[in-house]
Image (tube, rainbow, N blue to C red; front, side, top):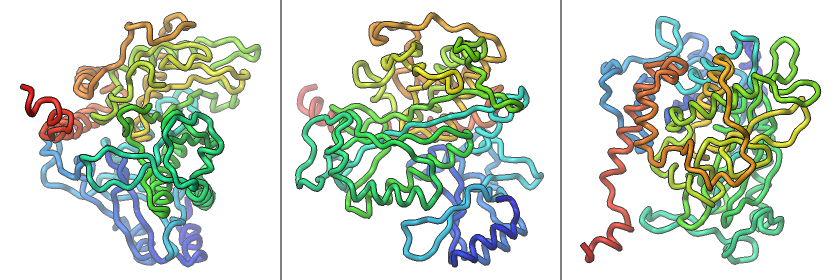
Length: 450
């Protein structure tokens, strides 16, 4: 839908009273403004939808970065709604719509630091070569009891049986059915928003769930993941519990990932460029994997953007700790699932569920693109347990990841120097805020012992 008249008819025919104009910030948080429908239509037509550029300098704590790079006069950006993202918000009683907006300078140039623009920039690099990335994300999350005290550990919620889970129920059907009312609302609301969610499974953790998306266009899937996170949180809240996409919400449970299956097809023929018709790996496929192996260390801050992200990446907790690759090997960071030639792909298992989907997709695809255009060669595929190998180890802490990104010429060239610099400022400010917090562990073990 790109016709303004069609958008107006869509809104009026559904008697929509308000429109949420959404902009995704660095952390993947929905920012924006809410307008009555008629005011939205007139503002969109006249370029009157505006937000200060400083929203991209806002940290996950709500603070603003005192940037050394950005204009400190806080100029407005003009929002341009993408009609392809126009959807109802099904959890409101009053008919309400949501739409994702791109941000532009008064010169007409798109903001070089908006996360959605960064993904579009990477996709344009593929398009110049006649390539189109296809992605299929798998998103994990936990359900947990409401918790208003941040010092108190999270607990699994009470299901239909009246009891919380006390053990791990991987792939458990009855364990998922404990929360049927939530998932029924989730699926109904996803259908109302045209979100292409597919399989639902119980993951390894207590009340941990995974949702798989149908493969498709990377920008569309990033929009869908962004909207899906809002949807699941609201479905859980309706039933009196939380849904969290923290990478590691529980101390003794596995973390939550956002696995990204990615392949590349020809824009001319639609054929999968990762496999020959006979099922042999192509040079482009191997180059894509090699690019991921070489550059993911530098892009890691975009796949693990928070302090908590690195608590997930530990040995033997169903998460990778290096960038080895292998066929049907879930211990490696880069897994190649068994498939037919037309669906040959690599599964990047490194990103956390807490990652901004636009930036995670952009970073992962950028690494693969660099490997393809530079004709890199990967290591030999690993047939053993990757936890035994310390080579190609991923960063262990956020500061390590930020250091790698700061010194990466390749990431600055592909993603943009301005974006990388601003992202680093935002994440450094968040880490500084974290450093001011004294944890329960410190009080327990240091208070009277040191």
